[in-house]
Image (cartoon, rainbow, N blue to C red):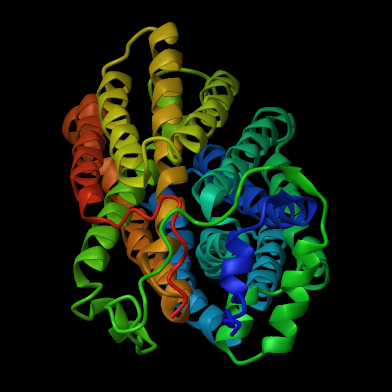
Length: 451
């Protein structure tokens, strides 16, 4: 008598694949959107430094310009995740690119602070929604054995975008009085790229299956199975999900309330804590670095040049995290890079010579962006498919609250004790995040929870 075996699910088939040409297309397609996002966020740090001189802005006004975008990002991240769980990952990804691309282009035409504040808020709506949705989307299509590494590589596109912003800041913005307007005009590129995303990338097969669209999910999976393998990694997950009847096999209610159910409340609390602390220190430091260097006596071009060099250290930080995350695991990698960020922040805040500023700034870039890579890898793995984008979006939204507060906190902290006090505060937030990382789940090599 023959024994029938159940057919493999969509999730099992995706997890068992090697890294294929189709995966590479998903990674690069999403990564370009990610890089354009980073370019927009990075540009505002250079624009603020110029507008402070051209428009004779106070520290409060420049802080408001930065914080307006982050306020939009907080709202966008929360709403974007909810929408992605309802209408699909790809659709929300494309819409967010369109929104912030058009708003960034329109920013090139503003003539005063009020109009710029409104447009920066709209830009933030798109930016905030795009990042958690993109990481959720890619994580749901990546093979289990290398999922963390793939997400860190996706996050590495942030360094590409930030480097592009630094190059624009160095070459374009100082070139003329309207250089900052040309910078914003270049930031409109995501609006055109949104069409590529909408029509060139498939929807998440896991989301399609969860929504009862089995035929569409099957089409997507077959496209990956038919694609030539590039790297022979993948295979059966090390630890498959638990059987039905266990906690992981039980049903999960949809919506925000599920994030605080007994099963997930510790993960959610720790995830929100880490996101809040990392956002506060990262955006407080990197949005203000060009302005801080100018305040310390460096001219605009030299401070932008220093920032460009510091930014280049982001790429090796991502590379190290991409390798270590599948060797050490998610929690260890995240906490080690956060501790490194704390130490580098203290050293940067007390640096006095040009060589020390560049060296410690590069260390801060290396460790901080490596930590970001690990955080983006662990976040979508925290929740089941039914609330994955919602969970990632709300974690990012809570983090954006910190990114609103951070630019506003910088001027009074600088007045209190200068750069040393400011960066000691950033180091403290990094240290708290490193402790919070140990309350997160670690699904290295394991299948995603597809409830």
